[in-house]
Image (cartoon, rainbow, N blue to C red; front, side, top):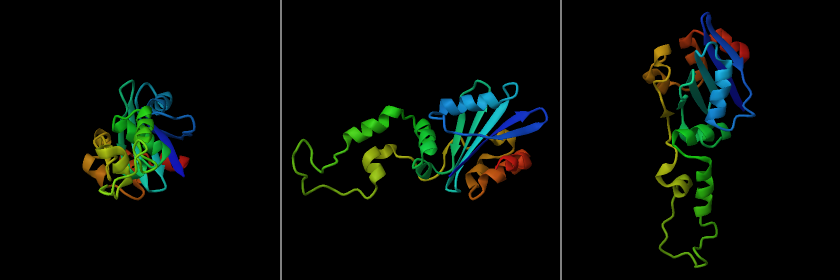
Length: 181
């Protein structure tokens, strides 16, 4: 179960809206959705959370490229929206996943030859598929994306549990975020 919300900065503080991600397939789609919620091209912060397993913060300032932070990339990569953000941060495009599947040896043979006896088993299937390109176990992205708004890089990296409420407290918008939860 996902929770997603947009916080748009205004002259009077923050306005929150819960958002549906059904039509979001790329980071560009998410950034466009955030820009639609913006007031006078000011800052919009998008939160995505999946059952306290991981959270993502996406910051959009006007027409600038979005900045992204994920609390745990390896866990996030197992979900559709987390995978979208992880792939973007790692510089993968949609065709990379297909390329990985094409390169897999699904029947244990290569070119019809039986598997050799000296094959080393890999305990980590993600590394076996992606090599060193697998998402890291832990944070990924721009941990300083909220520093000028009151959440330092160190504070963001230390968050767990109900991280979005803690971030909202620091931004001074707890009530507006809780209103859309």
